[in-house]
Image (cartoon, rainbow, N blue to C red; front, side, top):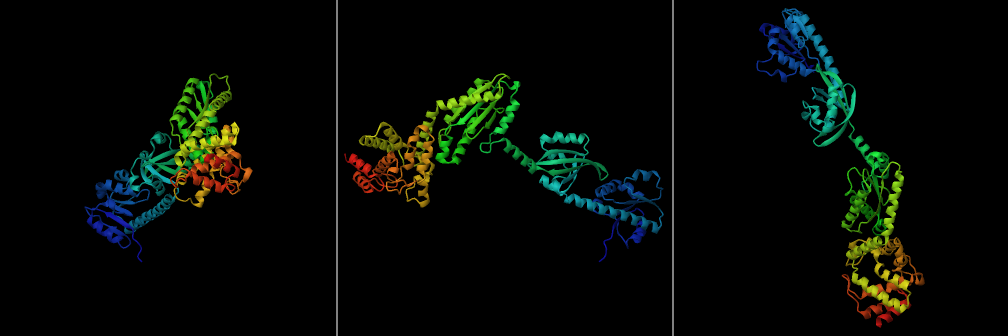
Length: 579
């Protein structure tokens, strides 16, 4: 296999010299004689041999050919009849590597060419090594001349996420985010050596954070700036996420207690007075958690968070203080404006969608008006006012929440207001026959209305299903007494009927649910409501069944006495219905 010959461009005006030199060199080298119309810039050469006459005409082209080869050494050997110290050589020494005075001996010419090509070979080897290092570097590298990119390695192209052709020759500042342009310009103007800054590159609407280092170098004989860029986008994003999580509540997106306390310390200055604080407590969160589960409770907290934010200003600090508590820090805000914000929050709650329950927040506001007042005392005062507000409206709030739950149940099930009213009427009538005291009559009336309240936690699809329930669906239905128990237990004035709600599907023979109670273990009014509920359901049509006649319903209660129903109560109820 023949070795690849070095290419020598021979540019001489003298035809005889051209013939002799070509003959001398062509055995060892590939000698190229340029054509008049040949574009020299598209070719690659290892050495250029040129005489002084041609050089004058091709000076600019040769200079460009040589610059294109930088930093690799491209020797240009000048054949001249003049001495090295003459003016022409001094003017052209930025182009010409060496000079040979003609006439020249064959040995001298061959030796000079051999030495110059050896130097080029070493230059190529060095360049290939550094180029390989650059291309394999995990750090983005580019070279700037007059702020324009003249070289870029693959990693810098990867960071930018665009083609190499869209980088070379383009101003580096084009890729810099507008907020960081002045920072980079300052780096160019001032001493850029060993400077390290973090900047953002914005390319095709994609943001990249890079650690940017710059050093002055000479590249292709020109003063240049070497830029190294390490993509730290992931690190910055991670830091931002960590910082966000450190200072924000994961559920609502509001600030958390840590951030609030830091801002409280920062804003607790005379300049920020009057400094108002609003403490908010969400009403009914436990009821919602018990009735619908914690996912719905979380949704309620998010809704409240959105409502609280709307009347506040950008400079106000809104934070989730605890499980169902929020706090608002209002710098340079008098008490009256704080109260106005509370009223606007209440108004927004009343207008918000009331599913699963009507939004309700107890609030208290207090204001620090001079530096002598301790900020903790101001917070304590706001909390005290919030608790007073909560107590003052406790009953109406709970009634509102229970009414919301009842409405939700009516909307998503076969239960109707008529059913509740009929049960209430039957309960009062039966209670009189049984001679119940007033407190038990009141409990029975409550139970007739609330016994199935736990069904609000069951999906509408199951509650309104007209075909037979699957075993899994029936198990879900069987969970409603326990759900209702948790809901009602959370309301002190309704607590007396909680046990009866839990037991209203127990059976006299102990085969009921959820606890398998039997006989007198079942609360008395739960045994009563079980008969009343069954009778009303049997005697009125539902979408999934036809109504029984009164006689058939009585016969069914009589049949189930001693198994499903308390036999004594069943007998008394049948006598009442028969009149």
